[in-house]
Image (cartoon, rainbow, N blue to C red):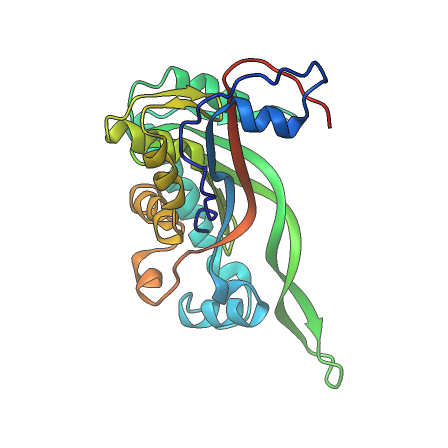
Length: 289
């Protein structure tokens, strides 16, 4: 998840070249060579899985239920108290901190609502609101099976899908800017973390007191382009994990401390990653292919 390798020209202010005397239409290559005044490569949007690798198969789920849940039989009944406690912890967290809770409607554009609510949020670090939506996901279910020899019934756990509540924590972070962390409310409580590399760069420029002009999803100009590129290149896997650990300590957690001490800890993996090459022109121009 490191920033991509930078070409020699990246992170520099370019000097626009004079227009060619020929009246022939210039090519796109000519436009980029003569008119680019800022060029930066960076990670853009990151959508990351936050999961417990040990709980992504039936065997691991059974082990957890027996060892951590104290279940005498292989049944998800052993983890139902965890689900209730997690739901209650979220409700209490919202009330205690007076955080808006929004039930998303089908087809509602979550990003637009988040942008509107962030615009009214007065803090540089905190939870803007919590969104709640029913979404389909992979879960474990208990089903009744029968011994083929004796005919005796017994419980067993299988993977299935279900429509369950998901909680979106829309936050702003002092180092990463806007992001959201989404939890599934059902065992094994998989989560997703969505960050933006451009927002990370903006936060670092502000912390370094480096003047810049922002775009909605990018940077229009910067007083120190080389430093901007260094910031983008420095967005490493270790740094990306930092906000997850920080906010897991602040937000309601589905697993009690005893389970976390036993090694049940969220780990990140890339689900979707978008890379960006920003090229800012000195003025509107056109070119042919």
